[in-house]
Structure formats: structure tokens, C-alpha cells
Amino acid sequence: MDQISVGEDLFAALVAVCLVVVFSIALTHAYHTYAERRSAYEGLDLTLDITQYLKNNVLAKHENLVQPGLVNSTPPAELDGYLELLGSQGIEVHLEVKTLDGQLVWEKGAAPNPLSQYFSPPCSVSLPIAIRRSVSSRALGELSVQVWR
Image (cartoon, rainbow, N blue to C red; front, side, top):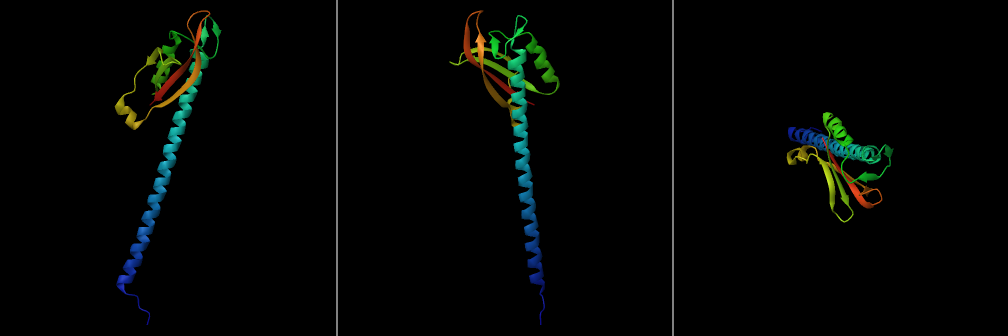
């Protein structure tokens, strides 16, 4: 006589439900990890694009010449317009130009709000540049760009 008791059916149903719950938790965790990595990659890609555009186009204009990688010791006037354009799209940017010994030459843009960093952490990229001090004097430095939404 093969009779199945109520306790065995209940136990089998409980095991099946637990397996489905564990599977759904694992699937949700995998998707959450994927979404975080994708968001980090998109943030880094956006920051790198903005930094390269600033370095090669906006900051590189000198007396009607474009010299990529050469930055003046004062921020150019076109920078404000570009930062306003990014701000209208919900992208905040903070720029710093420093010499290799850590001396700050100039900085521009809003400082990140600590509360907004929690929900949308800033992404930062630093690229090497040459800083134009005078017509014949140049110093090596770095352009640091911090971007957040």
C-alpha cells in the first residue's frame, strides 16, 4: 500500500517553494550585479568622452590655433558655455588642472553634493596635459575631471 501522507506532501511542497525562492533571489542578484556594472561602465565612458573632448577641443584653443593637450594656465571662456550645456542635460562636472607636483593651477565647476554622491556616485578621470605658463614656458600636469548626474 503506497499511501502518501499529508506531512510528506507538505514537505515536498515546502522544498519546491524554497527552491523557487532561492532561484529567484539568485536571478535577481545576478541582474542587480549586471545593472551596477553596466552603470559604472556607462559612467566611465561618459567621463572619458567629456575629458577627451575638453582636453582636445575646449581647453586646447590658443590664439585661433588648436593644440590638443596644451592647456592655458587660466580657464578659457568657452568652458563656461560647455559646462552650462552639460548642466542642462543633468550632467555636473568638476575640473581641476594641477602640475605633477600637486600644485593646483585652476579649478572650475561645482563641487559634488555628498547626498547626490550616494545615489549617483561620481566618476573621475585624469589625463596628462602640458600647462602653458607663458609663450615659451610649459609644465607637465594633469587634467582631472569628475562627472556625476
